[in-house]
Image (cartoon, rainbow, N blue to C red):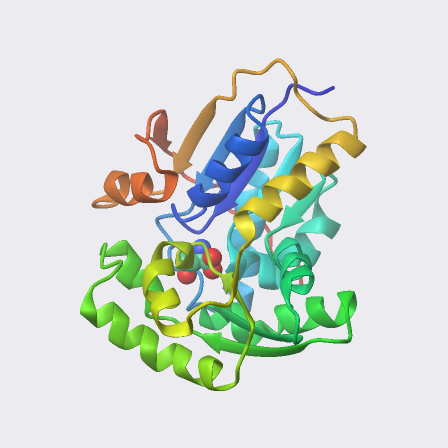
Length: 270
Ligand code: DGL
């Protein structure tokens, strides 16, 4: 047993979808969430910058005594998971592999589409994870960089969003993928539009899978908290315009207990 909180970080507030899933699956765990809203978006920046930011994000959580770190940001998990694992001794889980395992369970044809930010897709992290877990699948990746600002704007089923989605997703539809992995914190909010275009195929939102794997890992490592109140403390590096409205869209409930923090710099690892 360990009553320390679980630490979860993301580039912004989209990772609250992972918080929501973790709270549902592990109601007694206390959570410290860090959203690096001052430096959002991560998905359009360089690998080096995101490795540096992710190390700083992890350091913030570790300094607060977390027993486990969850990388809720797909862009960070794509490029920084390995280096974070070798830099810190606290156990760490990312959002990539849990989604890959679920997609492999669901696919019948082995043709799997993956959508994400430019950094996530061009990093090749998904191809690598799929190859390591199963050689049987054919992965079709597509970067959808405009989806994040559309969700932040609240245009969840606006006609502009539908046009953009049609442009991005038509190649995947044409290639007959039978499973689509939503490889970005923001994309589950676009499910209605995505489903209109892609139709009745399998969809993977990794947040639930991350919660399930976290629960299993906490049990295996004997780190569970059975008595906690399930509190959530939210730290943001900038209380940017509309952050509360956007955050509640992801969290699905009123956002309480949040504060602004500055991150200490951390030496990058080369
Ligand atoms: N959280 C990011 C991700 O999941 C999306 C937003 C961003 O680009 O920072 O990749």
